[in-house]
Every structure is written in C-alpha cells, then in structure tokens.
Length: 309
Length: 311
Image 1 (tube, chains in turn purple, green):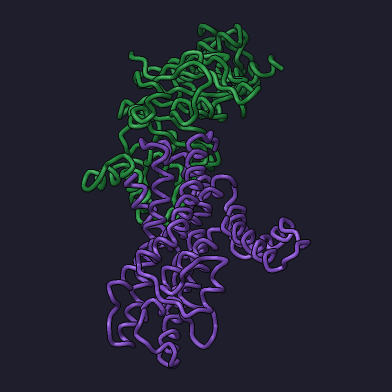
Image 2 (cartoon, rainbow over the protein chains, first blue to last red):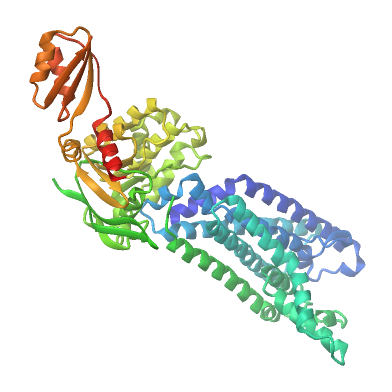
C-alpha cells in the first residue's frame, strides 16, 4: 500500500483542481478570520479575551455568516470530492487500472492507498489553514490560545477531518459505481446539495406529514415537528458536522438541536471541555460510522468487481 | 522443455453466457505463443484469469506451478502484462511512470534507476525519458508499455493486442522488440492478436479461439495440414527473367503440385509452406526473385477457412 499511498499523495498535492480549491478555501478562511479579529476588537460585547481563539473560527465580520467554520463546512466536501470523484473510473479511463492491478500488489492496496492518501492530504491542508488563522489571531491580539482552546481546536480538527473523509469516501464510491468521471462528479455534487441544503426542506415536509396539526396544544405539535425535523436532518453529515462544531467551538452551547432556542434565552454558563465532548460524542461517532460504512461499501464493491477493461 | 503455463478445463461464465469453455492450454518455456480469434472469443477473459484478475467459474490455471486464482501475487511477480489500450499517467514523464511501477514491485533506489534506464534503452525511448507521456504517440506508448512489462524482469509476458492501433511502419520495430525479448531473456511470450500476418511472423505456436474454446492448437505448419486438409496454398512469384530451368526446378520441389507461368510471373500451387525453398531454388538457377508472396498468409488462410467453414 505504501507505494500507492505516496504516489497518490504526491498527485493530489500537485493536481490543479486541488490547488485551486485549496487557494479558494485559504483565501476565504483567512479573510473570514481576519474580519473576525476586526469584529472582535470593534464590538464591545465581544471584546473579552474569553474563548477568543475559538471565536476566530466561528465569528464573521460585519454581520455576515461567513465564518471560517462556515467555509470548512461548505468547501470541505468540495475538496474531498475533488480528490475522490475520479479515483477509480479515472484509472480505468486512462487504461492504467489494468496495468496497476497486474503488478504484485493486493487489490485493496489501490483503494486503501487512494483513500488514506486523500485523508492525509486533506489533514495537512486543514492543519496549515488552522495554523494560519491562529497565527493571525496571535499577531493581531498579542497573546496565545489557552490549553483549553487548543484542545477544542484539536477536536474541531478531528471532526472536520472526519467530515471531509465522509465526502472523500462518497466520491470514491461514486467513482466505482459510474464509469465516467463526469457522471460521478455530478452524482457527488448532487448528493452534497441534497444532504446539505435540500434536506432542510425535505425534513420540514416529512415532519408536517408525520405530526398532525389536529391536536389541542399547538406548542406541543410544533415541538414534535421540530424533533422529527431534527431526526431526519441528522441523516445528513453536514447537519451532524454543524452540530458537532457548534458545541466544540462554543462552550456556551449546552444542548444540541431542539433545545438551542431556549438555552440562548437564559444567560448560559460555559460548559467544561469534557461536557462539550460528551455533548457531541454521538455526532462524532455517527460521522465516523458514515465514513466507514461508505468506504466499506466502496471497498467490498472494488474487491468483488470483475475487472473488464 | 518445461511447461510454464497450464490451464485445465478453465471455464468462465457470466450468467448464462460462457466466455471461456473448458480451455486446456499448455505453453512451454521460451515459446512465443499466439492467441487468435475473433472479438468476444474469450481471449482477454482467459488472460485475466491467468493473472488472477478474474476468477474462473471452474477449472484451474497455473503459471510456473503457482495457482493463478489462489496465489495471484506470486504469479504477478513473475508475469508481465501489457493490457489492450495500455495507459499511463499523462502528466508524469515516462521515467516517473516506470518508477511507480518499480515501487509497486518493491524495486527502489539505485536498482530502480538502473532498470528504468535499461528498459527504456531496450525499447528505444531513452532520449524521451523525461517527456510527459501525454506527448507520446500511440506507438511510443506501446513501446513504453513493453518497457513497463520488462521492468520487473518477468519470466512470462502476456501481451493483449500489442499491435492494435499502431501505424504499420512501427509494427516491425515492435515485433522485433518482442522477438528479442523472448530470445535474449528467454521469456515466454503469450500474445493475442487479430493481425495474423504479424502473428505468423513471430509466433512459434498458435491457438485459435472461438466461442470460448481453443478450436485448434499447434505450430503453423501442423495447422495448415490440419485445416487445409491437403488443399493447396497458392504462391505468386515474379522473377527477372524466366528460364525453363527455373520452372523445372520449381516443379521438382517436394510439395509443389502445379507450376504455371505467364510472362515473368509464376504461380505455384503447393501442399505445404515452401516459400523459402522456392526462393533458393530460383537463386540457385541464376535467377533473381522480384516478388514472392502467398495469396494470403498461411495463417490467414487457415483462419478464414476455419471460420467460414463454421458459419
């Protein structure tokens, strides 16, 4: 697997699509972090040093929602898909698949090598971006992050990487299912659109169907609807990732989902690190499970595939 | 001679369709074995089973005693495979493409550098080693494919349609590389092709596949006996100046059944392949051969006859 891993990692780093997307994310992320420092400085309410490094990743300047975290959740999947969408069908189309598989390697070395090289490349890119943002923070604020902040950022990194890996795995699976790279790229994009944006509307519609309005107390009905909506949205890795990073980067988030609205009304006291982790543990595990299952399907499919060229 | 490749009632079914049907092959060391047949006859499927890339429904295949299904890694360590429409990473140079193959074979460092240099020299691409492969012509790509195959110093080489899509001018060069490879390195070569006159030029033995079965196997002379069943091969011969001595000496050759002439053109019917003897007989009678050709190559004749008879 080693040989495939190093070759693929080198290819990914050198590939134009990766460089272009990475530059976009780097630019957007750094811009977001920079405007965040400006906002933190300007607004009196935000001008405490408490969790300031975490806020660098979640705050956005001048009222927009475009924080660093927003960009990772938005562009991250694209980056994963860019690496994976032609992983197998690209090799087949070029006529290299037969040649590589006729070398004395186990068949799974190819798909494992590609997946883990992709994850490694994504993690290097992500670590670099986060360090740049932290650097900007230290430079403009004049002090460094606390141990607690570093730990939370490390966990944020892990969650983000798993989230990227989900999309890489989905893209690799589609590159196996569809013979043409264009088709698999579009399929991945479609999947991303559905799971990231449309799931909200679907979940509303479905929840409306499930929960009847013909009850005495409309508040309870609304509550049930919201619960159902949330259950359905939690199918989506994007939603799970959003919940996980929300709690990890903001110690004031005490509950996830339906309870959030209430928690913002009372003056919340921040959660300790361990409690925040406890809160997002199900989300993290589920994300990891989705990545494993999707990659597992791709793996089995690739091992069983009849190699017709 | 040791037997290198052996298949015993090798069978592959895709649902109802039988791609390869109880195939028995036996290929000996150092042979250049031609694998012929129309599209869909099961040639590529057989090759994929030999490499363990597809598992047989029934029967077995071994290369140097290694079971191709159960021990594909050992088989692939000693077997080089040039797929039909071989491809490379276009953005990488020839050298880098080969370096990747080397590393997949666990050949690294100085050893890898030397081998890459050597195989690129063997196929005549050393001058363009640093060029990205996307700038290569089809023929160069095919030669790079052979370099790629030779890199692991294989004992067996399997070439699927190596001459397909190459301009006729580059084919002799490619065939020469294949011939040299089998002779100098004592490599057993299996090649599949439809281009029969090329196959005839370099193969010592052939098998003709049809509907998953090897309908006929043997060397070209044996086959001509079997299939033509004593029917005559027609050879056209043009000499500079026809003399009666030439006509007489040609008629006297064994296997020649009929000689007719028209000006300086002679038509010879014979029951076996006698082209070489015809030529030397003309020369020994102080004549000069201008052209000498069979109406079709022997193999082509066999092939066509076999498949037209079948229809």
